[in-house]
Image (cartoon, rainbow, N blue to C red; front, side, top):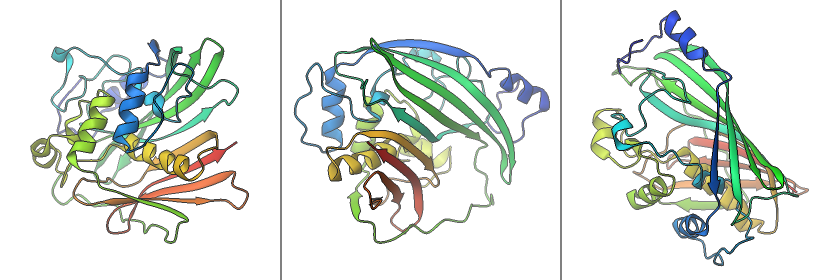
Length: 296
């Protein structure tokens, strides 16, 4: 099948080949060590107590583990691993984390010191013809287990799309809601992006290689990681409701965020305090991510 990075339309045979990945699974193991927890705490500018065995892992911080560790010879031109393996070998060049849905179980949190196992399965491969070429959505379902059993579930949405071309239509932006009860401004400088890339062993060049991201992928600046923005939204909840247990978190990326300007995190708790609507907006007030956190 073609691996042409300029491909904009997938042939029916290619699509059928990619959809044959549905149902494929992989199992990874890891240990919840303290060093990544300390490092992410520093990166998020938190003054947390030093983690010790038995410290509960904050929501979304499991993304510090089960990291891809491909050999250098297996890395593609965008800094990701070459296509194929567990994920389908989609020839569309731009790959982004589009959103997800997660659930944690209060009676079985993931703790520092745990030996953990993640079982992942390709749930679906869905095609959509967009105005600027084909889009392919891959749903990955994860289950994370520790010695006591199931600790969290996650549905991870990945979208692949064609390379940007001059004259491509741009989706109209959505104005962010104003007047949130909780707000925080973030300056996404290249040091923050580098540290998060390093912590998650993410080699994708759109987050640190300014020449690549502007000249090859056609973006105006370094792109802020979607998972980092999601983590910062959860961190906003932790700062304003430090004793709450986050049992569910759903998020969707709507618009790219770049390192050229500060951006804002927003949170609006419900009257009963059990649900928090969360969203991120760029410097122009356009909505970039929306999310919901359910609290126990």
